[in-house]
Amino acid sequence: MQTDDKAQETDNVSVALADGMHFIGDIDGFRIDTDENYGGAGSGLQPLRLVLLGLAACTAMDVISILRKKRQRVSGLDVEARGSRVYEHPKVYDAIEVIYRVRGKGVEPKAVERAIELSETRYCPAMAMVGKAAGINGQYEIEEVV
Amino acid sequence: MQTDDKAQETDNVSVALADGMHFIGDIDGFRIDTDENYGGAGSGLQPLRLVLLGLAACTAMDVISILRKKRQRVSGLDVEARGSRVYEHPKVYDAIEVIYRVRGKGVEPKAVERAIELSETRYCPAMAMVGKAAGINGQYEIEEVV
Image 1: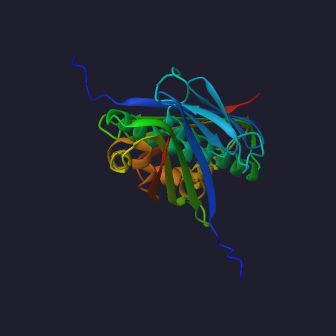
Image 2: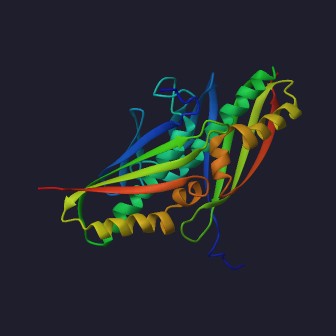
Image 3: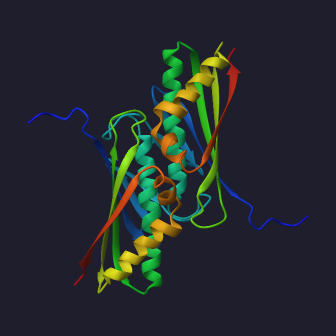
């Protein structure tokens, strides 16, 4: 039988009820506690914030990778994601602001813009998927390191 | 000034570069390490799996909550999510299987079906958002506890 080069990869995760609304999540043996509460109360993380964190981490990895390939001298990168939830059920995010804070020496704004654009349009699966449901607006700041 | 009852809530998360592709995530002061590696290697979790875990936890909380309101005697609930990623960039999930495993005494299949349907169509923001990009197929099993 021929191997299918385009075989799909499958990601597998699970959650198990602990008590109340506390579910213990498992990703590759890592435990992540989830709960319905907001603001750090309760026994774990609010599920939609995990989605938002996945999006922030996904695009952050793209941007650092592209900036390194472009030989930009980046020493730091923080990415913040702010999701605005609508009032009506199912209370989706309708708008997400993504703020990239780049630190380094002589980092070119055009390189940062291009890296963000490539992540948004080509590389980041979380951006591609969530972007079907919410408007995503990327902004950046560059801090010169002396 | 009148208070806007429909004011949007904002979720705020961030990631900060540690080294390599390792980013330290922050949700309400909880730390979640993320990295590009698969299968539990590397320094943290693969971002898209966090999205999938958020989805699993989101729908799990809906389903347990609805089953309790329906006075079903549920003693356990595991939810597994399997996301199939396409081969081409941006390697999104095109299909997600969600398997609900309910344990309890005399739990009614119709109640479980309705709970899943309500989560999919009305309550779960992660399902609503990710469902714009991927086909989501829910299945369930009920285990009678003696």
